[in-house]
Length: 164
Image (tube, rainbow, N blue to C red; front, side):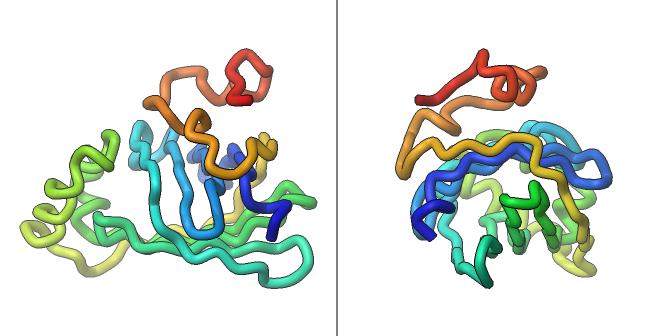
């Protein structure tokens, strides 16, 4: 697991959605969503369960304050990832509520979970291609420290935006 911890990935799902994730430590991730249904959303210090499934395959799973459940299987050596996301009905119908820096709006997420319907869940299961991978070290607070902006992932891939 020590080689996986500190990993910073940009990946694009087959449906075109682009996400970014930083494996901050053994039980915490930070992430930004660059495009898709909730593009523009970003989160720091999300508690997760991380396990090594087999050599070179790692699973990261969590439940968000929105009620969204996520499980991602990373295969870095193959530049592949498979994810399954269980969006509550309210997130699928009102994604704009979640498109913000979540950490400052936990009460709004909790209130929305109660105010709107949860079921049926909107399930997205997709493979993704990892288009950027770098180990930024464990607990690097610089990696996910600002909102996503247009062209941010291109800046990271080109080295224009760096966190070391």
